[in-house]
Image (cartoon, rainbow, N blue to C red; front, side, top):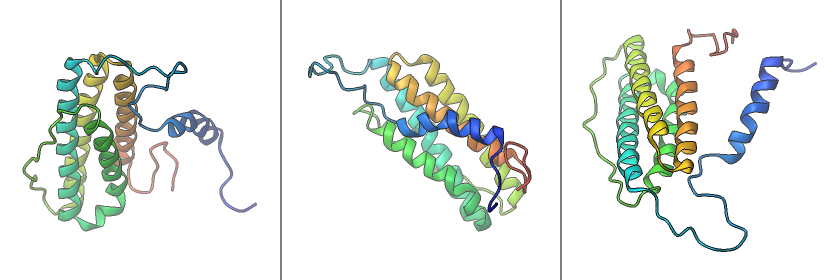
Amino acid sequence: MPGRPLTRRTTVGAALLAPLAAAACDIDPPARDDGSADPTPPPPEDSELVAAVVAELVRARSVVEAATLAVPGLTPVLEPVATSHAAHLEVLAGAVADTDVPAPAPPTIAGDRARALTVVRRSEQRLLREVRRGCVGAASGDLARVLASIAASTAQHGAVLAAPPGVSAAGEVT
C-alpha cells in the first residue's frame, strides 16, 4: 500500500475542516432569495474592532517578514503563516471601507533561529488574543464568524510553530 495509512485522527480532522475550507473566509452575508439588498451597513462599533484586528495582523505580518529576513532558513516554516496573514488582511481590509492599514516600523530580530521563532510565536499569541477579543466583541455575526476562522488559523499556526522540529502539532513524528 503506497503512502501513509490514514489515522482516525486525520480522518476526523479532515471531516471537520472540510466545511471550513469550503466556506473559506467570506464576510459577505449569504444571498437572500427575495433579491432584496441588506439595508443596514456594518455596525460602526465593528469599524473600530476591524481596524484594531487589521493593525495587529499588519504588525504580526511584519514580524514574520523580519524573521524570514533575519533567518532565511525559516522561510519554509513561516511561509504558510505569511500567506494566511495576507489572506486575512485582504478579507478584513475590504470589510469596512474606512479601515486604514497601518505601516508599522519593521521589528529587529536576531539572526538566531530559536530566538526568531520565539519572537514569531509570541507575536502570533498576541494576534490570537486580539482576534479572540474581536470575535467576542463583534456586533455583526458575519464578522464574528470570520474572526473565529482567523482565530482558528492563528491557533493552528501557533501549534505548528510550538512543535519541536520533526514532530507535527498533533504529536506525530514526521
